[in-house]
Length: 329
Ligand SMILES: COc1ccc(-c2ccn(CCC(=O)N3CCOCC3)n2)cc1OC1CCCC1
Ligand SMILES: [Mg+2]
Ligand SMILES: [Zn+2]
Image 1 (cartoon, rainbow, N blue to C red):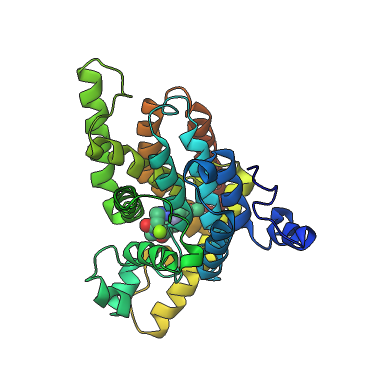
Image 2 (spheres, helix red, strand yellow; image 1 turned 60 degrees about the vertical axis):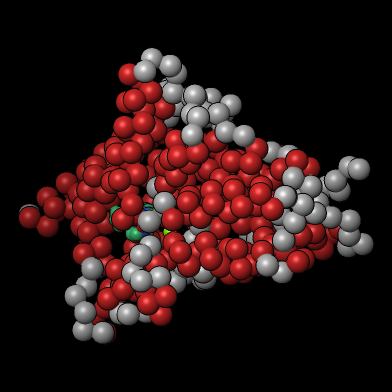
């Protein structure tokens, strides 16, 4: 049975079309995710009932908070970036449709109900979430718990036609991937990833023969982490809009820290050079090493990404030089 164009039979196609229309900007997360599910034929492969997918995505989108950066646009952005990265010719044929379903789902849910505050802030203010999750990946545990809580309503359970065993593995993959987006996990995640690629290179067989669950999920964890850190690899006009959103979110946290008499986190200090200096430092310390490693796996697919990353870093260095020279004059 052909799936209707908008995914569901509806007596009011025009109203639904407006609602789903990404141009109207009302529901970018739903529009992008629904489109990706269609394009990857996930709706048919997993017998997902279209009206349940729409209900789930509407509820998910509405559960993203209206904060400057970690809002539904970021969820949509990471989902779209994940979709593109999964198409890298280097890994296109590596992952099966279950892993792809888990990866796309993990990407779109990965920051749901984000409060616009960082884990250290929630921990030092003894927020209920920090108590609940014992200071361990507090936000990330919350995001993935909310994502699965939304699935409990029958009209939103998009996985109702998966077997119990399939659901169990999907759940494990999604939890593993969302928890891996905690920056505190970055160093271990990247080191394990580099060791895996090194071992594969030593053994001579091509990278793409990933047998164990642990090897496969390790690559998927780095993949969602790359998607989450993909702002710096985007064209400058897009990238600079993300920076502005994140800085507003950080500055609001800085204001809260000051009001509470707490030390202001370094990234939350309002100052003209903070933006460039932190971006350069962050790209050098975290983003470039991660994308370079990813680039070695999918070589040469990441070359454009690495070039854009280098150009964006140079742009920050130039604006920092201009700033400091003008202030020293
Ligand atoms: C557009 O700029 C950024 C975009 C994304 C990130 C970023 C870092 C880690 N993640 C993954 C989620 C996480 O762990 N976070 C969320 C951001 O705050 C830190 C804890 N995302 C960092 C960015 O810039 C750096 C932070 C201020 C200047 C340099
Ligand atoms: Mg996050
Ligand atoms: Zn994120």
